[in-house]
Image (cartoon, rainbow, N blue to C red):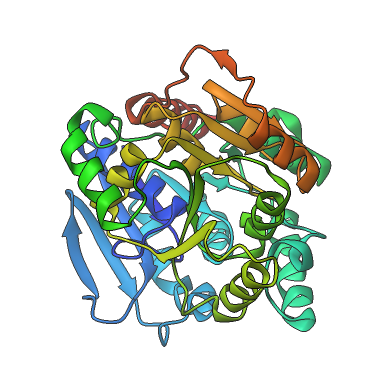
Length: 373
């Protein structure tokens, strides 16, 4: 099978969508299929190269994924003629992929991670005009008719069906996780102990949270909950990434922590390379995921893979993907989160695993049926 993947960002840009598409491309190449990836050209990247056996075509778009929506149209049509199926994702790759499919008669499917219609002001740190524009653009994507819609969770599937998409066209396929990488046995106790010393944590209980300081990550609710929690000899470690892109929100979180007198209780640190993140998880005693919206919830799945007890919000897919020792607090409910931190009466369920091989096979099943229909 010849597969065309159209996505606004791709490796070396890292995110949930990029990880999914890279894994799909690699998985299908390994199974003997031909894969082409069409994306926008990032700074310091080549227009064309091979990554894991897939041909990657990058369209110059003034380093803007928004311009890619239009600058990629002709290349998408050209590549579609040589493909059996086209697959894309929300948001900026959706239109050129859909148009290329319609003009060449090739089936087009789309991965939907989250539905943010009507929630852009609550979930992002965009200004009001930016939120109106993005809300409009997202609505336009769902007005396009795709052959198949693949959702990364049941929560996203329900939201998509509420947008009026025919349920018979919608399928849930969970993303995968590299369990070999997230194997707690491959991180030594010595590494974790040395990190604890480096951070000056001593023998304190360590609660760990990490991610970008966007509105949807809910870190302000965590900070407020810590002010109410009564856990002796504990420290809350908050690792924030992409600070340059979320400077306003980052400063807001710092001010909130200081205002509540939690400077000693909550340590806010910068992100570390991916390889080192699992050492932090090994070192931590508990993980807290206070997100207000999640399409799949990688932080939760990674914490579970590292065999850490986790406290999650009830937002989006998190209750679906969590397992092992865990607690669920009501989304945005500061008092309920504080109570869960104080009284760790864990729910204990069998560990759920989300394997990439299964994910790739399920996508193949969808594409095979779509191309034959």
